[in-house]
Structures are given as structure tokens and as C-alpha cells.
Amino acid sequence: PFDVLVIGGGPAGASSAIYAARKGIKTGMVVETFGGQVLETLGIENVIGTPYVEGPQLMRQVEEHVNQYGVDIMKGQRAKSIRKNEWIEVELENGAQLKSKTAILATGARWRAINVPGEKEFKNKGIAYCPHCDGPLFKGKDVAVVGGGNSGIEAAIDLAGLSKHVYVLEFLPELKADQVLQDKLYQLDNVTVITNAATKEITGSSHVEAITYTDRVTNEEHTLDVEGVFILIGLMPNTEWLQGSVALTERGEIPVDKHGATNVEGVFAAGDCTDSAYKQIIISMGSGATAALGAFDYTIRNEFP
Ligand code: FAD
Image 1 (cartoon, rainbow, N blue to C red):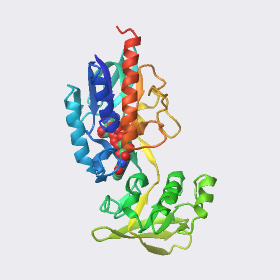
Image 2: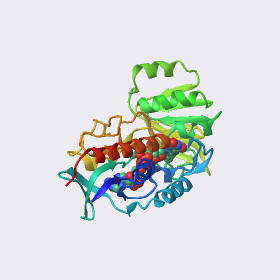
Image 3: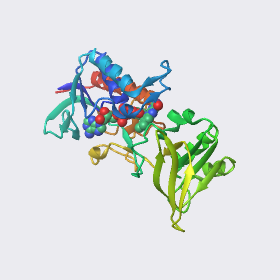
Image 4: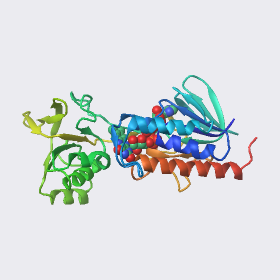
């Protein structure tokens, strides 16, 4: 059996594996794809101490770092279920059963896509999902935010401070964000809110140049000239496989305490799959370290068969 079995190979999983392995304990990793969401990121400018790095390059370095510690990495494998008996038992989709004293869940999250023409083509070419990451790229430019929930309106307020004009497109007849955010938004003079807007297409040549939407009341089509489109219609944690075994919030996130512990003894969690307030690389790496130290502490305080 492992001492620590990490599920997930993004920043949170990699950081937990390194912290665990540095304790000299037997550490394994089950990863569908090593690298996680960072592989989809072109330029990263907020990994402190590294002013600029591209996602694939960062995760190559992270993988090399993990490999320095003799972590048993099982790539191309998805965890299917987890339960606690004498050991923590993790079943993989290929049927294999793994046992460990502790487990760290770090399966991350995925942004919901709007699935319109142009969304895939212009990813990293004007289409963005994270205002903290990519906001500064749109300084002085016109941008659209798709989504009028809390994350969309927070993004719009944030972007209004940098961009020239921000258009908020909400599908429903009204915004869904908290009232305080809406009040704040409506005070800004470089923001236009458009409700009942069904995004139809994102167009451009090498980069985004416009977004087209259908007004759901009049059925008319409108096009806005923008250089950026932020899509903020929900971050979905990759936790479906945990339903019924580990407590989840109503949004599907794993609640953790300050040691990264979940409600199941010996099972810890880190990164975007948890209820952490913000979802960033540095935050995921930090919570991965916390979860690994929490798991190590657990192994020295408990007896195992
Ligand atoms: P993830 O990166 O999502 O990794 C999850 C891992 O778990 C993956 O390896 C996946 O394959 C694996 N996995 C999932 N399910 C299973 C399973 N059942 N079994 C086994 N493995 C599984 N943050 C920044 O700080 N700066 C940025 O500039 C930035 N830009 C971003 C740009 C984009 C387009 C996106 C999408 C995100 C960006 N982020 C950025 C956010 C950042 O990427 C995430 O906060 C971070 O990757 C979360 O790390 P994580 O390890 O928790 O999860």
C-alpha cells in the first residue's frame, strides 16, 4: 500500500506529491493527464518569481520536479471510486484497486463552455476564462463578459478598471449576481449590461474581433466589436466520481478544513476541486502542500494494519 496516494496531476496534485515524497514516505499519483488546466494556458504571469512562463513549459518543469522524488506516477488512469475500510481504497476505471493510508483528491475543475462557433478557435486568442490571469492583456480594449452570475459580474467590475468598455451578456432576463455586485456594476460608466442575450458566435481573423448574440425577446441579431471575450458561466469541479463517498457542497466542491482534510478520515483534498475561495495555480500549489502535510501528520498519528 501507499502512504499517500494523490489523485490528479495538476498544480495541486504535483505539489502534494512533492511535499509527501520529501517526507520519505511511499507516494503514488493517479493522473489522467499530467499538467491539468495549466496545459491550456498560453502565457502565465502570476506565478510569483517567474514573471512569464507558458503553461506546457511550467508543467514540464513541475513533472521533472516530481520525478526527482521517485513518486510512482500512474498516467492515463482515471480514479472511479474511493472508500475507506482498513485502508483507503481507490478503484481505477481500468479495474485496478489501489490501497493507501491516506489519499489526496486533486482532480481540479473545468470551465463550462458556451459551445458556440469560434469559442475553440479563439481560445488564448482573445477568449479567456480567468480575469485574474488574462485581464491585463485587454488593457484599454473593448471586451465582452458572457455570464451575469457572481463570477461574471466580478469579472466585469475587475475588467472595467482596465479595459475601455465592458459588455456583459446575460442569457436570462436579469443578472443573477448578488445585489451588492450589481449595484457596484451599475455605478460604472464604461459597462453595458445586455440581458436576454444568447451568444451566437465569436468571430475574428487571427484574434477575436467581434461577438454576435441574438436578443431572445426580439429575435434580432447584434454584433459587438470586441477584442476579448471572457466566458464565465461556471467552474465545474471534477468530483462526480466522489458522490456518495466524500461530502460535497451543493456546487460539487469538496469542503476542506485548514489541514486540507475532508469529512472522511485520511482523505484530504486540494486545489480547484475544493471549496477554496479562489482558483489559481499558486493557490492550488499552496493547498497541495497543506494537504500533503496534513496527510503526513495523519500517518504518524494513526496505526495501520
Ligand atoms: P487541474 O489543473 O484542473 O488538474 C486536475 C488534474 O486531475 C488533471 O491532471 C486531470 O487530468 C486530473 N483528473 C481529473 N479527474 C481525474 C480522475 N477521476 N482520476 C485521475 N485524474 C483526474 N491560474 C493562474 O494562477 N494563472 C493563470 O494565468 C491561469 N490561467 C488559466 C487559463 C485557463 C484557460 C484556465 C482554464 C485556467 C487558468 N488558471 C490560471 C487556473 C489554474 O489553471 C487552476 O487554478 C489550476 O490548474 C488548478 O489546479 P488543480 O491541480 O487544482 O486542478
